[in-house]
Length: 85
Image (cartoon, rainbow, N blue to C red; front, side):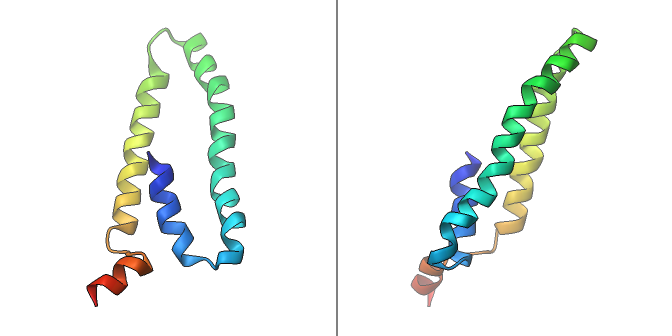
């Protein structure tokens, strides 16, 4: 759900020639985290039988979404700024 939000906020602030690079720079850390998370989740489940991985993932997602909202709440893309003027 955060991909459209991230893309909507990143693309208007970079030039059209830099958009492919900006998209990859913002997507690579997410892909790396998705690749590393099964190792961490497996380790947590091996240490404890409690369901820590879903709880930690849910908490991180909530914090991430709230931070995105707080950071970009007042930022409008150029298309929306022109409509208000």
